Image 1 (cartoon, rainbow, N blue to C red):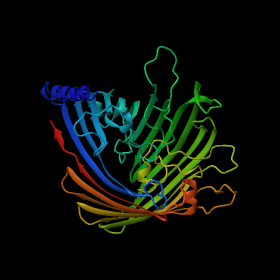
Image 2: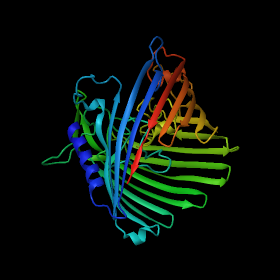
Image 3: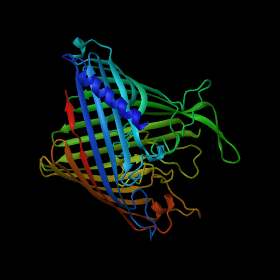
Image 4: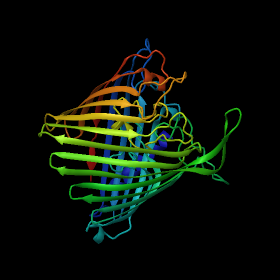
Amino acid sequence: MKKNVYLLWLGIIGIAMLGPHKTLAQLIVLGQLRTRTELLQGQGTPLAKGEKPAFFTSQRTRLNAGYKGYRFHFFVAVQDVRVWGQDASTNNRITNSALNGLMLHEAWAEISLLDTAKTKLGKEFALKIGSQELLYDDSRLLGNLDWLQQARRHDAAVLKWGANNFTAHMGVAYNQNRELKTGTLYDGVPTAYPAGTNGIGTMYKSMQFIYLGKKLNRGIVSFLALKDDFQKYTLKQSGEKTIQNGTWNRVTVGPYLQLKPHPSWNVTASAYFQTGKDRDGKSLNANMYSVHGLYTVNKFFSIGPGFDHTSGTGANSAKNRTFDPLYGTPHKFWGQMDYFYAANGFGKGGLSDLYVNSVIKASEKFSVSADYHHFSSAETIHNAKDEKLSASLGSELDIIANYNLTKSISFQGGYCTYFTTSTLAYVKNVANPSKMANWAYLMINIKPEFTR
């Protein structure tokens, strides 16, 4: 498999570089080698007292090639993700998809359905098909999750239209485990690793979305409507799932607003409602809202508050009221230590996050951000004895430094600490937890680019 992918890449690049080039044709080859060395002492979930911290280096190696020609754009991204020492130094990798390894991250083509004369006027009408990243607005619900070394992509088709600062996208996806002779039943848990929306463990069978966006004089306003469908199933007495015909359908809708009402202020706000059925067929009625402001004090310093709220399910609720932030980038919003919505469970009580962001831009090449979060459960939590627990889920301090050595070489280092509570330990099912968790990392990112 690995040899075939390498040969495919050599063929694509060779044909593109040696073939005839018209004036409008362009080849772009972009590489990336990104290492991240991490010291984990309770990242994601508090460690129990006496547990030892972890230390490792992971590496993403990616090769992207894009070729633009008359009314088309072709793009392929191959990546290899692994931990240093994961493979024997003298042997080829034994195929095991649970270890990620070499894979095709993106492979898509975009066809312009308008003639060049119209696209030069700023109009767009195009079809993009294949494995692709979906990024919209602030990546809260649809994002590429680039912090994760493997990142995220979808097998989809997206129809794009745009003119006069207005954008309309319509996307569809339909998943199957393999080529079949009959039927369309889908096992939403692909081989080797838990899949799905921020750790829920199930991939959608099909997905459809409509995105509408309008550029304003001082910002952007948009609206997203997304429906994802999960294969129905029944449970045997043994707990084994039996896949059934039909799907449970979940619908998420809501607006997003980004405004710059004053040169010194930047404000973002969003609100989403979720209804239909969840992946297990339970009726769903959930919501989330967010507001954030950032004030630029001067060219060196910015600071601003924010508040996020995602609804949760109370103990006596007949419906699922826990909001799922879909296919976004939770690492960007709910703390760098990924305690919430990043494949790390914390029950169904939802989350309230009151935070302050600050950025110090010391120079064009060097900046430091410091963020403080205070997390609370959106719903009342009771323990096994039906005793009411404190709503506080703890607080987190994140300090991140960025330095751009050149256009292609950058460094990022971070130190983050989390102050735990007994309620957090209860919802994360950690006995005798440490009162404080720490995480530190150094990431080196090298991204050479070749254009012809």
